[in-house]
Image (cartoon, rainbow, N blue to C red; front, side, top):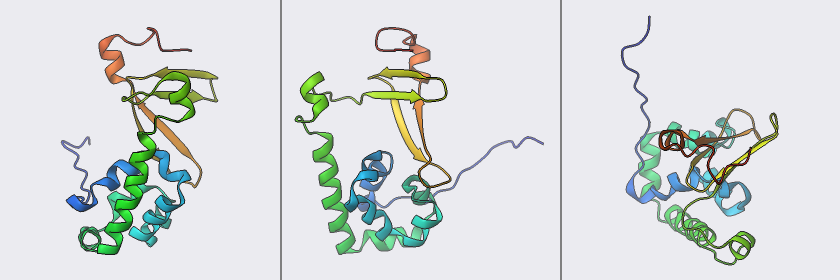
Length: 160
């Protein structure tokens, strides 16, 4: 029997922890040791149980733990420092890409599929990054719904 309605219940992030959501959906944390330590510090057991997947981890931490961390001054100072480094990185006009192609205030998305040997790129696509299952297995989901609905697929900016 098909369910009438499906509900997904996840803890609500307290306002003080709101930057965690933005950090979780960007792979920047993967190569930043301070960010990795922040996730581990937030919930060490959940960090290991979710195979170092911050998105999945945020959905599995108890509301009580989130509330406690939102009042932990040391954790909030650490979060603020990591988030400031992240924002500085995202707004850096001196990166190789910015120097060679100009700074973009909108995200530029590229998707490479090794199985099919295709590269699809477009600066108006929205990317969500998730890490599933096993350590090191990363799956990038690119939301093309907007592009399909606007007829942008196949226009300049896509290489297949």
